[in-house]
Image (tube, rainbow, N blue to C red; front, side, top):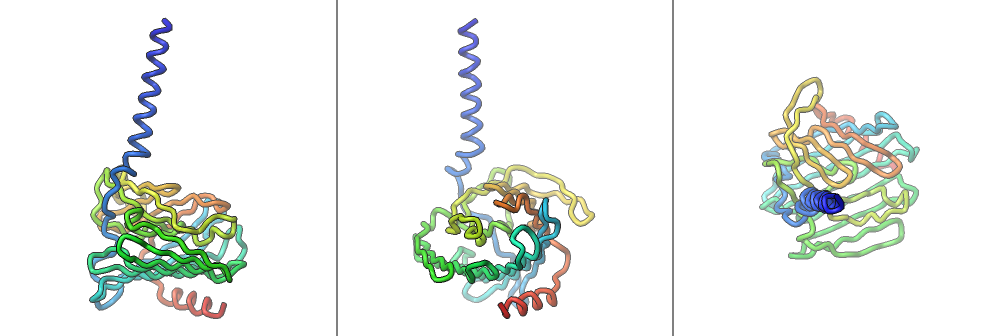
Length: 268
C-alpha cells in the first residue's frame, strides 16, 4: 500500500511539473517573432481606433485613441489615453508615439504621462542594434537602463497591452516589454518588464451585439480577444489598486473628442 501511495505522489508531482513547464516555461523558452503589430494601409490617411476603458469596481474610467501611419521610413503609431475616474481622483493623460522600421520592427518609443503628483513622467527608448537604451524621467529624477533587443519584440502599456495583432495562430508566443506609466503612484518601478504573450485558444465572444470568433491571447495579468483581422476587440488587465480593467474597441472614431482631450491636456 505504501508503495502505491508513493507512486501516486510521484505521478502527481510529475504531472504538476509537466503542467508548469507547458503553461509557464515552454512559451518563454520558445517565444518567437511577434505578430504584425501595425495594420496595413494608413499611407494617405491614418488607420484609427477608439477604445472605452471600464473598471470592475469603478465603472467607466476613460477613453483611448490609436492612430497608425505608413511612412517611407516604416510606420508610426500614436495613442492618447485619458483616465477620468477611479481611485486616483484626478484626470490623467498618457501620450505615446512609437516608430517602426521598414520591416515593422520596433525602432523608437516615447511616452508622456500628465496629471500625476510628480508630472510629467517621460519614458524614451531607441533601438541600437542588439541594445534598447531606455531613459525615464520622473519630475527632476532620471533613470537610465538598457533593455536587450532579444528580451522583447514589442512594447505594451499596462492599460492597453495590445492594439493590433495580425497573423495569429494557436500556440504562438512572443515577448513584449510591459510598461506601467502610473507605477510611481503606488511605488512600483515603471521600467519596462519583459513578459511572454501566448495564443492559447479560439473563443467566441459577444462584441457590440455581435458574436465574433477570436483568438485568446494571454500574458501576465492580461488576456485579450483578437479577431481574424488583427483587431483587439477586448482585453482585460489586472492592475494594482484598480482591480480588473476592461478595454473594448468601439465602432467609429470621435476625432472631436480626441482633439478636445489633447487641447485640454495642453493646458496642464
